[in-house]
Length: 231
Image 1 (cartoon, one colour):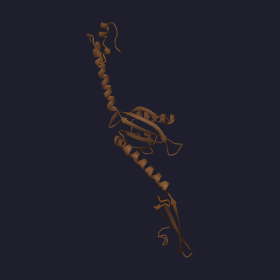
Image 2 (cartoon, one colour; image 1 turned 45 degrees about the horizontal axis):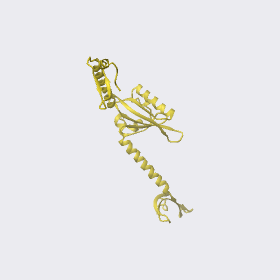
Image 3 (cartoon, helix red, strand yellow; image 1 turned 45 degrees about the vertical axis):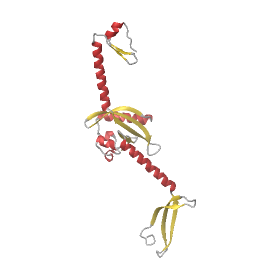
Image 4 (spheres, one colour; image 1 turned 60 degrees about the horizontal axis):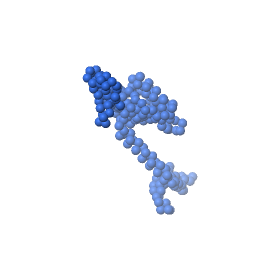
C-alpha cells in the first residue's frame, strides 16, 4: 500500500521478543521514499519500545475502571466541580436523583442551571467557596430538594487537583439522611412528652439502670428524698 501510494505512512503496534527473552511492546512507523519518476526506492521506518507507555496506559485504565465502579455503587450522590463552580462530573446516582444527564449540566454552574431554589443555590455556593478558599475539607448538612420535597443531606466536600498543578477542583459526596433526621426528631419529641408527663406527676418516680445507678428522678421524688441522687 505504501509503494502503491494507497497510504502515505503506516503505524502498527505489536509484540517483539527481546534478546534477553522477555516480550516488549513495539510501535512501528514507516513511509515510502520515491524518486523523480515517482517510483518507490526504499521504505524508511522506526521501531520504538513503548512497553512503559503501555503499562502506564493499562494502569490508568484500571484506575478509571475502579473509579467508575466506586462511583456507580456509592450509596449517595457524587460530583466534581472546577474552580469556577462548573460541573465536571457526577455519578449515576446524581443523575437518577436529580433527573438529569451529565451532558446537560457539564461546564455549567448551579447559578446558571437554576435547578434548585435560590436559597439552596446560595448555600451550596458558599460551602463550595469555603472549601476552595481554605483548601480544607468540609463536613456539613445541606437542605437540597428532589421529587418536590426538601431533603436533608450529609455532605462531605474536599479539594482535589485539577487539570494542572495551578488548578484546584472541588469534589463532593452527599448521602440523604432525611429519614434519620426525622426519626431523631420524632424521638426527641417523644422523650420531651415522656419527661413532661413524668415531671407533672405527684407520685415519686425514678429510673434505675441495671448497674443500680439512678439516671432520673422526677421533682416529686427529689422532694421526697430531699436531694437529687442521680448519677
